[in-house]
Length: 392
Image (cartoon, rainbow, N blue to C red; front, side, top):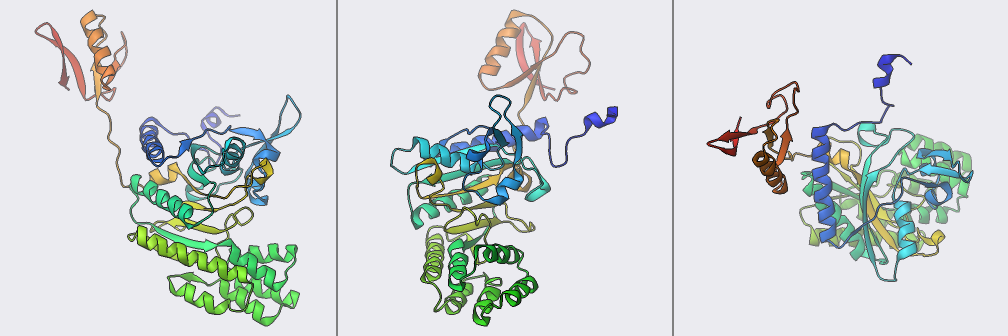
């Protein structure tokens, strides 16, 4: 390896330098305090664990994102977490007491390939999850907490897209598609590729009415008029489709009543997380960004494989993304320069200042650079026999 190559980091892996790290930490503390005030308890899942536990119930997508390695102690396959949601589901399943539980988390996850905003492979994932309640009220609470998360990070202009995986599942059931065909159509629908969908329908000789429903589903995104159009389109199909559609409509009405300032759109073909979501799904967008800055939804029974099938809803986002989009500038702490002097009165004052929350940097004997070079705005000077803090 060339000497210059030692400076290089893998693509999509970033280091965080002091100023940004200080601001990210400020955001982290404020968000955790927010979640605490809402009754959400912090959990810290392990960074690496056995693969079968890490990927349980999450589908193929997360498997592709996960770095894998062999445990030298047991020979079992392990994975570096690419998403903390399955880990938190396991924690809830193991320690829940029957009442609704509110859990939050924050930590680095690792992806095999760049994913999401800024193409990072090491997002600082933050999220909140509510277990033990199946209903609009818990989905509404999670959406409200996400909106407050974005507001606290200085992101004001936000819109939410609502969808429901039950709509697509019900249409697939009504059309009698096999699992293989469901997967093929899912891929084309996610890309909203009508030409690819038409090719599939011709190959399958799908009934023209059912084909038209799927084609129109790919275009069902926009304002409240989408719901009215969908009700007409889905007449006569599986009842589960109309049930899902009514749920989205009721949730949107509850959002408008509780948070009238929020902008809500609908995307009934939104299927991210399809393999483990069971109900409503949502995404948060900000102007000028084509990708969602936060994702969430309902994933009931995700803890079933761990022995506890409980309703669940939650959201996750990347703190680095929120920081990059924020219009809030964190206050830089004032730094006090202390000379390289072992005077007892000086050392005592340094201790008192630090105990009071002040930032004091002590010079080292013979060092290069003065107070300004060290980024200090104030200094300790001895005047009239006493040490005092003075501006530089």
